[in-house]
Image 1 (cartoon, rainbow, N blue to C red):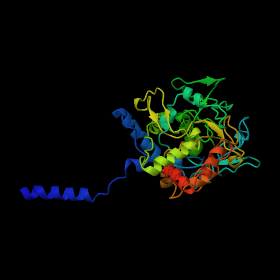
Image 2 (cartoon, rainbow, N blue to C red):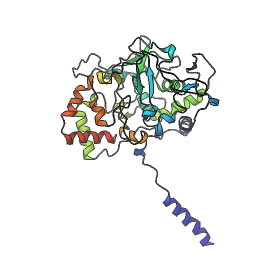
Image 3 (cartoon, helix red, strand yellow):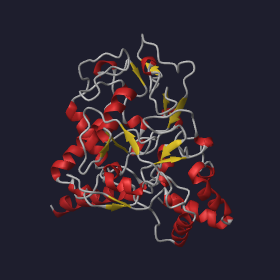
Image 4 (spheres, helix red, strand yellow):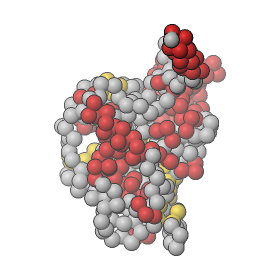
Length: 393
């Protein structure tokens, strides 16, 4: 009898030891914030399934014109996209608005269901390719108070440091709900998501992505991208809200090897080169109804502002009130894990043109010229330490 009991236990123990260990938390981008309630964890799980597992078909509302068939296909492991999953935007050359809305703008739907023709970029329209961003830590960025973003802005460069970050003032969506302590100006609100900071919050970002990327209408975005007509919702409002909650409560990327000498030295060199003026190391959230996001200090390396990045990164296309050469400072956290979702190599900057972190830095211009020059003036060993630091994020 004892042998019968012992043998299964030994077998179970042996099988457990043979199972491969899961990846460490600092090696992956997905996973929920700590301190969520049981109810919040359930909503996170529902959003996770809708985001990563649901693949749309003709029968479930796909298209007829679309870019992708699911959310997760553009954000593998909640990471950055690949050149095969980049989005093409067209039709706006200045702050006057998009001139090609009747021709499919602002997003090119280059795929179509059988029997339909995919879109083509209209003759004469300027365009830009946008690499899908990583998703993690978005709830923390969403919870930064508007007043904090305004405090970082310096459009007239009053401190004469050559950096004049500007707030992205955008027209709110009808369904936008003012965030706690939200600030408006002449009927416009502060955008903070997207390459040009043209999205107000994660509901705005998500509802538009369902509509323009997958061709799915909702109560939030009811207009078909195919015929411009309003139709019945093709996705439940609760599903959209679950995905928004999932994006809000994904954990922030965890830095690796933060205490090693090269990383510590590289961070100091990054700051001394004035790279941290735009890529601000630390931000703090304001009040959030999600307790796990409320009054939290975090380290995204962004200021959420628009900056002049020079002629090299000027695509002649823009969104909202941004100029064609202005881009929102992208968060750097998770940068070292980008290759995991990009096929083993880097595709950086807004369109993926840079194949290394070093190349991305050297393509900085405009307000970033001085920081780029400071980086170039470092010794080879010092530049290597800066890159090691950035790889650790």
